Length: 242
Picture (tube, rainbow, N blue to C red):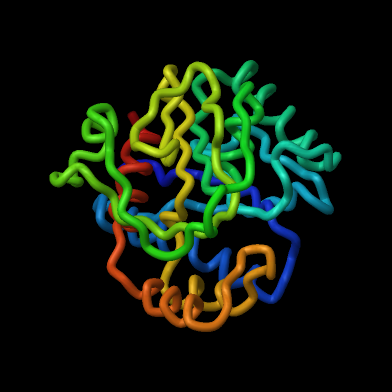
């Protein structure tokens, strides 16, 4: 029998009424992906608080470490952000085979940790299920995407401006990266997000994201569009075992 994976998720947003839903979205997406892979027992998931408790996972205990979304400036000097970025660099140095996935803010802070840059988007925040185009390398990574595109939830007002060196673009627009060592996979989008949680986050979106009136109505409808989140997680779990 295949040994169940052990996964650590760093929750990079302050605790809020949405925290339980965010945890549940990871648990549901990962369990569903595990089922699609015909795993008898789903992965065990532990959640960590890098902001207040500032406790990070012990890499040897986990097959995969996930950096979640968040709202802090990854280019800023918040002590917990700098500590997390240092943890990421140290983990890569001391445990070179450790698999890591970065999601949204995790995607951006991974970029910054290894020399890239992040800044505010010039236009409106990117929100809702969005179609992104894969590169040739991305098609190899996600063979289920026969049309060469992924449909994925997005929820961000910042973006990668300069990619970090040592990372391969799997999609256009700095949307998905894979490290040359094949150990770090990052997404600007949210493969764990579901329609209900997306609508809840929209309802409590910060003012700087400019979501109100007719635009909010359109985005609420867009949140229910079919997406590839479970398929992406299925591929992630396969990749962890490779």
